[in-house]
Length: 466
Image (cartoon, rainbow, N blue to C red; front, side, top):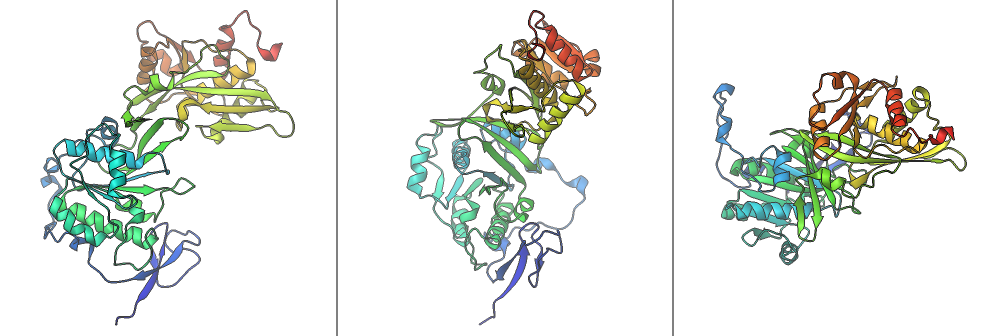
């Protein structure tokens, strides 16, 4: 009997060492080496035994990208993020928090692709086929022709894969699948890596698109070894707040398209529905005329969206003033508070500041700086912004308002929804043509933006001056 041996693999980069070390010699991470037994078993390319070979080397100029065309997923928001559809042989990792709707999106994808006349294999490792059928009953599409298989062993999937010859294979989830090549428990670093390698090799060999549903840790990172993200072609992150119905889909890695696009879904009783006009959805419950509210045009890839940023400034009761931020980086808000205090004369050191982006959406781009600063100043001065005003621009440490990308798209989106006045950087505003019935308000720095805010309510004294 062959003697079993083991190696120590890093959970961050996947590097291996013959013995345990406190620090990974490859990436330098501490306490990331874990023991993994090394066993026999079939090679990854033998899962389907298709006999297909990659062939010899060819010149890059002779490679035709049209030979592997995309096929649509029939879900508009998903196709937007993917760059036009699914690529045969591509491996996608769909990750998200528990309960956000990963399995619902995967099942809807299977139903839509199957409805378009393609064969789909859905492998459920966490549910029985009966449970999947109950969940599919409320979806808009008819997934009755989808091949469903409740199995957790990778080696057993080969026969079903060859029989169904699917164009799409969904594994829900990769943490529940195991292989005989590794003796550890399902969900371990070794199991996740080996199973993903087997399935990815089978997808490349058969030309089927593969979707791996994955979990995330409590810190928000994708569970499993970091090498899993390098193994797949596309990494999709499904985000959303359980208290809101809005879900966003982002691509943090995409070998076949851009990583800047975002898909917006709304969770309803009949599954996930794509939102063609997210701006109207986010502003549906806006209450105009309230101090501390500002509309901000943000850009996700080529898609402009209007979001409402709310701020509340209240006197600090005792001790150190609090700063609470939801949907925006607290470090960015702290920077804006310091600029407002030093460059614009807005006293905020003795006040509690609360900033919130409505709708459960998270804003990461600096183009929202001007809108956030105006919302905070509006709440502190008790002066509401005009109902038809929006603001976009980056704020530097000197208080200057800097330009951001694609101002024209942001301005057109604001004008389309009735926001006629848009505050924007001075250099851009001087050369940009305003849409019909709209007014561009160029501001060079934060002081001039606040002077414009005070001028909108000439008969009302700011709270600071009372």
